[in-house]
Length: 238
Image (cartoon, rainbow, N blue to C red):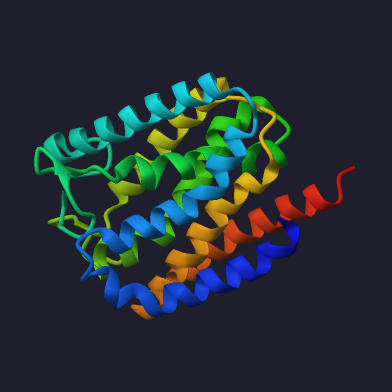
C-alpha cells in the first residue's frame, strides 16, 4: 500500500480537477462512484480486523445515526442548521435525505478513527480528535459539494462560501458522538484505512479549487499534514 499511495493521491487529485462538471450531470451516479471508491480502503481495512460482527454492528449504528442527524437538521435545524438536498446525490428517502448519506459519512468516521489511533496517545481525547479531523474534512468538502455543485444548500447562506457556522458546530458534535461510539469497534485495524480520508480530502480539495474556493487549502493542508505525520509514524515506528 505504501508504494501505491502517492500515485493514488496524484490520480485522485487529477480526477477531482476534471470530473466536477460531470458530477452535476450524473443524477447521483458520479457522486456514488467517487464515494464508493474513496471508501474502499477503510472498509477493506476494518473487514481485515477479523471482528466482522462488531464492525458490522458499528457500521449499522453509524449509518442510522447519519440518517437521524440529516432528517433532524432538515426538520428542525439541529445539529447542522436548516438545509435541503438537491438532486445531485440521487434517490432520497421520503424525498428528503439521499440514500448515499452513510456512504459519505461513515467511511470518513472510520478512517478518522484510524488516523487518531495512530497519532493520539490519550484514549480520552480520541473522540474529540475524531471530531476535529472530520470538521477539517468538512471545511474542504462543503464548499465544492454544496455551493459549487448544489448537492445541498443552506437557504440563509453563511460565512464559509455560503455555509453557516452551525454546520461546522454540528460536525464537531456528531463527530464527537461517532468518535465515542466507534471506540467499541475493533482496534487492530490496518493503518492503510487512513487512505480513505486522505483520498477524499485530496479529491474534494481539487474540486474546490476548480470553483476558486482557495481558502479550503488551509483546512485541507492541516488535515493532509496530520495524515502525512500519521503515515510517517507508520513507516518508522518507535
